[in-house]
Image (tube, rainbow, N blue to C red; front, side, top):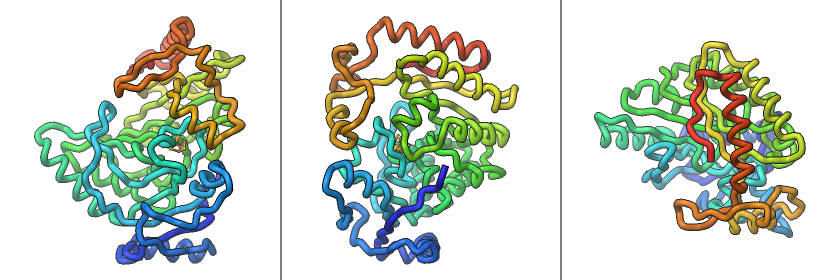
Length: 339
Ligand code: SF4
């Protein structure tokens, strides 16, 4: 896939007090990308568009280089203890993006130049919980791989965690540009997870992300580099030919991974809330995502709002299919959960 090349970049003036800010300004100037200045990375004006979709896409093609001022990390249960904010938003256009409801109608991609301050804060959180291990999630607010070729922040964070006896890092990605993370001293303290789906689903609903083939190739490289590895198969969607396609995904995954590794699997079936459906229809008015409430079962979630999940018989089919097929190809692997 092509790398993310922003159409326009906004700098917070203070970002140029940091070496990464200067490096990025030089890079974007060389690339002839228009640069503007903004007083705050949270209040960018100048994103044009006549419809919600146009504004959304324009925002996703824009980048802000700023300073992460809030150094209070949000909790991140159950995946980790804290979120680690290396970036916000991502250039992907997944119709079911989990950030759609939290980042508002103009989710401009933001990167932060004060990584040293972010990592110092990380260290404080680790020390506070000692002698227990503290886990940090790097993809709660973005897909950090998409902007790694610009910032190099993931690599530095992985190296930072390699030195932390009591700190662990994990993130998940739908991108494949991982070469900069190879041959890095990770000390097995960073777990890299890939979010996978069939080509049919990726081509239809995950525009501007890496193809299935590219993600599998990237996973193979990460596995050979000895990182702890995991896969999210999500969202699992039932459509004509779904079993054949998911079977192919699992078979091809097994073929690219070394035989001696046992990745973990997280399986998430497609679900939606009323709010998510209305957001999706607003931003992607032609979406063909299956969101007919009549074909779903309504279920109250742990945060109090209801969601529409597959009915029991479909869930049973999905469960039986994935448990059987993963057992064949990854007999020693753990399925962390299926929801
Ligand atoms: S890759 Fe992840 S963060 Fe980016 S749009 Fe898709 S779901 Fe959202």
